[in-house]
Image 1 (spheres, rainbow, N blue to C red):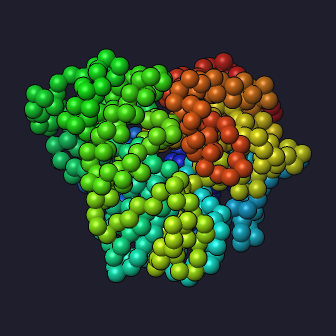
Image 2 (cartoon, rainbow, N blue to C red):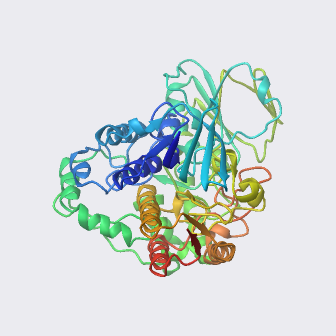
Image 3 (cartoon, helix red, strand yellow):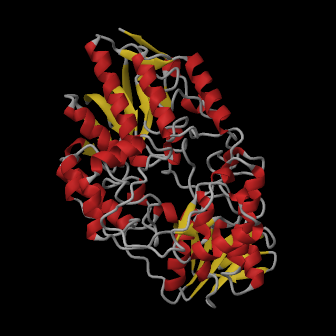
Length: 542
């Protein structure tokens, strides 16, 4: 079966790719491993899953009608509401007829003689196309660490990234959860409410701040609808792809203390003043200081204020000390938002086991054995994150010119030009791939920018009777150097920082900073300049 474009992945990137490319007259087929649309929001159904970008901005801007008709129930939406939005988009724009579900791509191979990409599925089907778009997502391959005895556990085993569709009944059960990253922080309070007893096995303490838990007010939503053109423009010029739009008509007046201006830099405050401002405004205030992310002294000051704030929230001083991050700084990892995370550890039916001081020996048939003893469990939950950024791409069996394997090319870390293309793989595009802002940006804004760039690129090729476009080796090496240069000196690459941005959560994965930390506006401008300069850094041929 032959098409103009093959798209791999039916999440938001794949859905918009189908919409955009279909509308410019191309034949498109999307292959999706799941049974429906939604991508990460389809797979991540764990209790407590929600977005860390405001709902009104975590939305598509390509359709004015879509912006005006969809109602968000909360300021920061839960997984079920985001999945409902994805389904609405698929229905409204009739996207499903272009998507083949329950279909996993096992081989993605370039045929040089016909300048075609051939994709083979787990069902043995073959599809060919002039162009291939990998819309496989940045957080789509769950990471389950190799733990001794893991296969021996006789109880129920769950992973936050592969949560069952059917309701999981935890009533009266002893539940253990391994991992306290974003998914762990979100699900732990919910698991505690359901289980008879919850044991949290913490590998590394986390910095987390309370999420806005307010219901969406109709007046706020209406004000956004009236100003969406301004909001979308603001997103294009904001570092993280959010507009920072502040409703005027619908905002309630705050107390004078709550609106009191704070300095731009934390070092302008004394240690006592820092502690006081955390006590009055919460841990989230520490994220507003500019110097925290680039100045080690400022970062140290923020870390100290954070730890003091947490100590005041935890009843048991010993538990509090275990929860305090001390080996890395605020800003090293993706910021986690929570609902009642620290309050959960004040419950009598929740136990915290710090694996740094009480190491895990093995998983047993009845529970988890640490040096201090055996914790018996009925259910074991892995909240251990993802093989981020490159995981899905390296599992798609991608081979380019002369049979070059992407896995071999990226053996020492991903090398790509602007996160869009890699040398040796003509007409193959990645959406929000390594080397682009991707996970450091509002993903829907990043997705629209990437897919629009790809769509315009295909139009340019067709209009100029060109058949292939391929990033040059020099351009991709120069870009990777730029990505790492921009990240240097930030908390993302501090010597003590071990994050999934660097691949540090995956055993044996090369340590290289993958997303572009220069900000979305700077990246977008570079993409536009490349096009204006005749697709500088790419080689186009007939």
